[in-house]
Length: 334
Length: 306
Image (cartoon, rainbow over all chains, first blue to last red; front, side, top):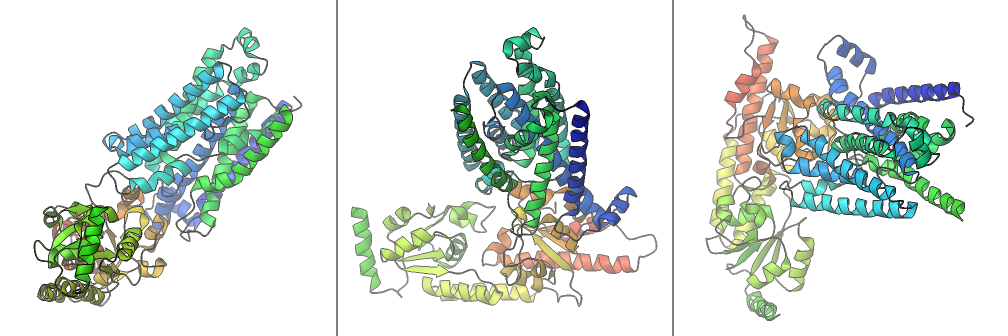
């Protein structure tokens, strides 16, 4: 506990500046030679020019969703790691994203979302909520790291298989090809409609998770100590389940399951917040936003056409990190 | 196994008379289905693909309902003991290789890149089916329909084709030639890297084509691929009437539907060209709004411009 409140504020401020810079960079990068200054001027003046259209309808939704999805993954990764007191907990690894994708796929391909637009984020939300509740029940029964991770792997495989099955049964001829989007995630050609659909759910999810900050701090002393400090574990669990379901469910419903962000980011941030899980939440959210925006800028700069899925880049960064973490944990355990 | 042996014997029997009129023709490719169903005698067709029965992708769905269908598996084809199998150059490769190994007579059709190649393909298939007169008649019918199109404007309006998943019709493609014959200048030929390039939505919007040709089926089941076609960034094309909806089946395969595609595109080109001259010299009272004109001018048969 070396970090002083001032340096924590400085950390959050630095991360905010970083996210702001990456947001601007994300808006500036694209496939058309857009004059950003002119586009912003046109948009501000309400002139319906081509640069204003590209900015408002294509670049902005992509940047906003990149930041919001990254924030959701980062903050929920930190909350799950704190609550399960397990360094490998991450929405992607433990199968929450996969289950959210399954829910969204069922809502989208079988026509529920065309009849009722909110069905898409709600589908993701239900999938994410059920899987989070399942995992936390398991963790509540005192399951160790290995059990939890194995259950997560099983959940991931199962939801991946069911997603593929649902897509193969879906009436659309393209559905089977689109499994890559749902398993890897992408932010290409998203629209403001997607932002409007997902952002409110995500914001509520963030708020729910952020309220658990002090309880997560208390939990580091053990469940009984936390309860005696006035943080009943039941309530904290419900808040994290609800928050994760909303944030991850809505993210996956519009951007697919982007892996590894929620795993990597809390570990990177932990030393900067004095290893306090409560403070880790906001810092991880912001760092997750920065990482996702950076990865999304990278997929547009890497000259492959069609562009790489976002999950490819986050996995390229995240998987080696995951392996290093496993090795480190093993050394610690022995 | 017994059936296989029977098939092999039947094959050997037929091998001596390959150029005789085939009695049992099987097709393993949607475009081959269309040609076979149009050119063969009734009863000559032993099997076509299941795709031919889907009215969204096929122009011969009604004809296909009268013959058995296959899903491109060798197991389905061999028991039919066909004396001619027509396949596509890029589809059912494993099945094709197996059928060849079993000694079946296989005719492989490429993807024509020009109308002349399309006519040649029609004549080739008709000749192999033993119905050359039907092939010649179909080519004549198509040539007449294309000759009927209005002459392209001196400054043809530019256009980009947008298909599900952001695919386009690039340079050296049959749709590219159909567009040229319809009096449209294919912008994607300068943007996309190949015949079937994929464009980012940003590139499509930025290129500012006069006409956006959207290859969408209005009743298609939901998919991300089709979702792209209704992205709000394309709303300006729809609201200003510069978007024309063209079912993709009209120019995926070789057949008389190519002329229908050209006629629809020519109508769109004509409307946009007229709107451009009117905007250049606006009549007193202001020009009428473009969308209403386009929608009435286009011969949309049930597929209204979305």
